[in-house]
Image 1 (tube, rainbow, N blue to C red):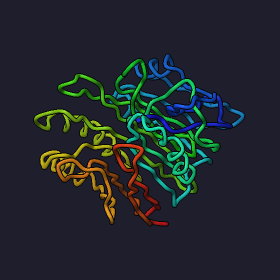
Image 2: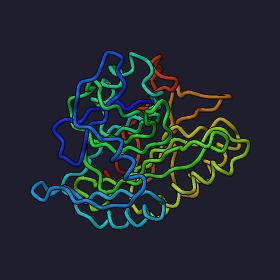
Image 3: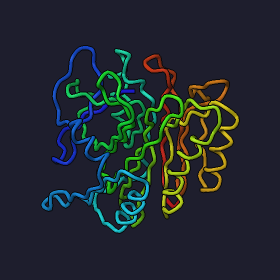
Image 4: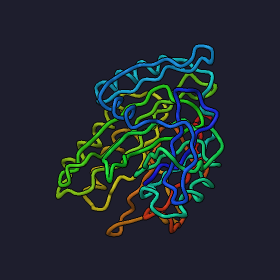
Length: 306
C-alpha cells in the first residue's frame, strides 16, 4: 500500500511522505531513500531544534536497541502530546495502485489524529494529499521495481521514539516491517506506545509468525501505559488467530470490535485488527472501499480515566 500523506509546515527533522499518484506529484519535504536505509542500519539519536523544544527522537534498528530507546524515551518530557479522545485510521493501502486511493485517503486523513498504513510506498514526487502537518515514521519492508514498500505511522504530534523492526517471509525471503512509536500524551506523565505491524503471510506453520509477534510483545510487555497494537496481521487460519490471541491475552490487550464488520477476510477470518490497553473506544467502524484490497478501520479512542 502506498503512503498517503504529505507533511507541510513541519520542522526539518520531519519530511513529507507521499503516495503514488498517476496524475503526477507535486513536491513537499521528502525523506530520501538514502536516509531510510541509513536508519535501518544504525541506531542514532537526534535532538530537535532547541528553539522549538522538539522532543528527543530515537530511531533503532533492532529489538534490543528499541527496548533501550523506549526506556529512554519514557523519561523525556514534552508539552506537545496527543490529546484524547483521538481518532485512529488503520489501512493496508495496496501500494496505492488504484487511481482513486489518494483522494479517498485524503478524506480519511483529514479527520484522523493517528494513522497506521501497511504497504505504504514513499515516492520522491506526489500530489499532496492533505494540507495539515503529519509526522511520519516509516519502516521499509521489501523493494519492488526500485520502490520501497513498508509500514508507515503518521500522527498529528511528533513521536518521542521510533523503532524499525523487520521479520522475514519464510518462502519469499522478503522483509515484513513493524513500526514502533512512542508518543507523549497531553496533560499526562504517561506515554502512548503504538505498534503498526504487517505480519508475515506465506508459511505452513506459525513459527515465524509467532517470532514476529513476540518481538513486538516484548516491547509492549515492558511498557507501563496505554498501548495500541494493530495492522494487517494476516490471521487467515485458526492457528494464526490462536497464536495472536495467546499473545494479546497475555499482554492484557483488548480487541476493538466492529459491527457491522466489513474487515477484509480470507478463509472466513478478518485480517486486520486493532488491540488496545489502558484505552477504550468511543466508536469503531469499517468502511467498504474499492480503492484497495483491504477496507479501512476507523476508531475513536480515549483514556480509561478520561
